[in-house]
Image 1 (cartoon, helix red, strand yellow):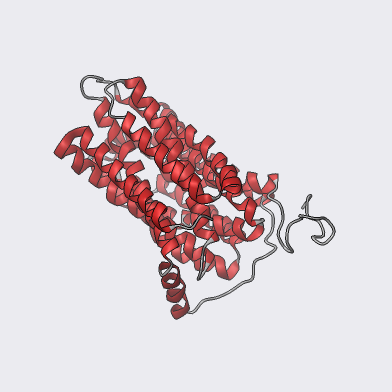
Image 2 (cartoon, one colour):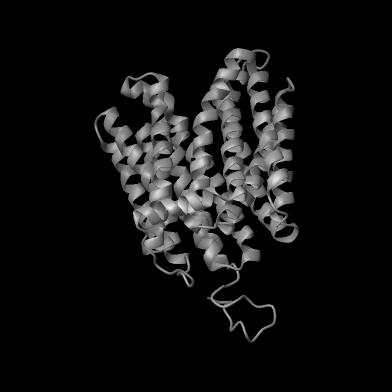
Length: 403
């Protein structure tokens, strides 16, 4: 690599086997994030078209998202062990490459149940990226640069989620939902090929195959660490709140006093761009100030944005969602990197447990937000999210070390 030097020749140079985070690694991590999350969320804006075409109800159409995220949650831990055996970079490349094949099959099969089966398989394959990306960068770059690289990767995931939603929908409206998903898959294929070319080979990876008892021991070992448990709970609680806000804001905006059309409310996803900007910035700040204060700051920013969403003014709500998104992804970028850096019994297993908490929170509180909406209106959903974030912040303050 261009800036790889003899560590003994230059004062302050990287320790043996470690390199400065380089532009190729930044590009590779950014693009693999796009490829993964664009495919994961591409059906979301197409659900009404899918429901009409397949003759299913809206909730059944939404299984095009749920089965994929369920598959991803099921896949992260197995992929962490595959990555231990064959290497992070090749495992990620195979995982997302096969996911593209499942994506093609999901629009080619003739029946809706088969589509769901293909989406589940796609999710299982996509699980290889969040399971291994942070472990890969944590091994290959200097510790003081790892937070920056993690922020770059997370910014790619935000762009990917946004791309999947806003590219597929207008294309699908004009040319059919299958074409909309195919266009997103084509974008993902380009990202995968670029990742294959730009991602640097591992310099610090040692293959290791774990027996079943060792695998269980690695998972339990990480769960015995109070620091890691709090980081996993941070993912569970804040991701749950974040998803709940986006899931049910549309219900708020189509009712009085706003009464906005659905196509217009979908543009709220453009607030994801705030996360694209905040996540790498959070990584830079964490490398300078330490992870803990930046994580706390991200949570407080998230709470401020959630509170603004209570104001019955559309512009204040939009501002609130931008602030919420910036705060959430800043905290997520820091916590994701911390989960890998603080692993005590398997780095990739720790990041997999983080992702398991992340998607479990999305499933649990993404649903419960609707329950609070039915019981107490929009204020009920907002109140739930504020409580979740406050609990996460309290745990961070009380348990996590300064660095």
